[in-house]
Amino acid sequence: YIQCLGKGMIKSHRVLRACCSAPKKVAQHAGERKSALCGKLPHLLHGRALASQAKQSDARSLFAKLQVLSRQSSPSKDEAAAVCGTLARRLKTEIATFTATEAHQLSVVLAQFGLRNTLILDTLASHALRGMVSYSPYLLCGLANSFARNRYLHRPLMDAIAIHVANASDTLSPVDIAVLVYGYAELAYNPRNNLLEVCAERLQKTYLEVGAPNCASIMNSYARLSECNPAVFHCLSRAIVHAQPETFEVHNISIIMNSYAKCAVRKSQTMHLLGDYLVDRVDELSPQNVSNVVHAFSRLSCYNLPLFQNLVKRVASEDLTAYKLYELGVLCHNLAKLKSGGEKVYSAMFGELAKRPAEVWEPKAVAQVLDAMRRRQMFSHPGLLVLLFQRFFSTLPSYSVHSLTQASWCLVELDALDCAEELHQELPPDEAPQGFPQGRHAMRRVFERLQELDSQEPFTPTQRCHVQTLIRAYRYRHELDHGLLPPKVKSF
Image 1: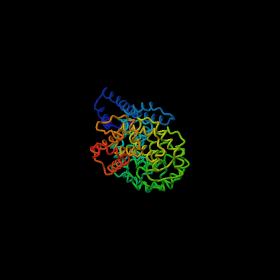
Image 2: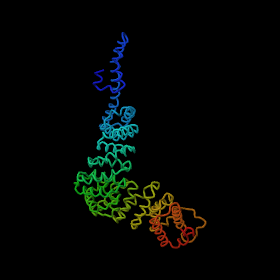
Image 3: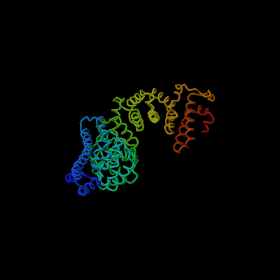
Image 4: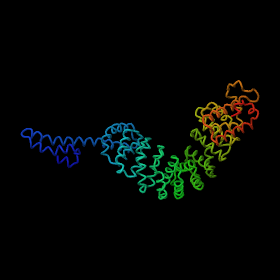
């Protein structure tokens, strides 16, 4: 009994009371009863102690096995999933034996394998909520990040972490802030307290310690949370200026530019500086990076001539099949808005877009590419125009007000209503035979769809202005057909 008690194996108050009262009971009985009780007591205590020790070692051995698997060069996810399945059942009753550091390490291992075991994650969340004071701000930031990497939103835990970390913000490092705000941004969960404001105040004091990767991560997280705090972007812009150019990876620069564009933060000098960093590294950019960089410059009305010369040369000469449809559409649209590039690059982009199947075109992509062709009409592609015209009218009910007015206005400006003959549409009885009835009926469908959208939700002043621009353009270019529209359409 003394040996087991000294080793800390006996933790139950009931067992201790039984052990303390045992000598008195032994003294009251004589003969065989006394000898039997005294003989069984050591075995009883030792058996309970060994069972407790074995039970504790099971959960820890499984956790240690997971850690060993995570350190392998090519870890087996299936084996890790099997270990997690066993660990989840044991951890439910043994989580109290884990320290805050061990709980954090377990969440990191799960995130590394991408194993979204909800039973383990719920158990870890309960452990953190019960013992929040034993977790340092560093561990809480890492825990929130691990849950986000597993795409598991535990609202009570995220709220508690926000409150606890906000109260201890003076101890946060820039790395802690980058890890923490990434977690909330990845889960698209905006903390209910002033956590983001507190982190912004902390960054203003430590901005010189923020490296290029963390700078990109923090700015992107704030932008994704729609928290366009000017103080954050101002102090991190100063950090960008003080950082060494070689510390920036090309994707870091792309993310920073995209964050400026999302929040409409106009830092033209910083954008030009980052553009200069990219001039000689254009070949390192991925297709998504190229699209994001061009979009950011277009959105912020900035331009870096050497950078765009190299970008246009690359796009004109590379294989564009590596670009996704929306990436190529964004690239084409924003190059046209910046009036950058010539016949060679637009022929390459429009030619590649014409090869994409009609089923993959979404309304936004259709409107963007049509607008690019309107802006650069001298480089328009007839085959692509027919494809977009047919796709537009075949999916007309799926268009929002903005995409509908933009796409139809571009078709009018491009004189593309002649493509209506390719639709082989059945004309209604009230359609007049004069003029060009096929093109007139196509525009009639657009106006009737706009009238339907207006009846569902009245247009905003901006939307009404866009619709009026469309009507004026159609009336100017096709005055006869406009006059032959049915009275109910003209009344709208």
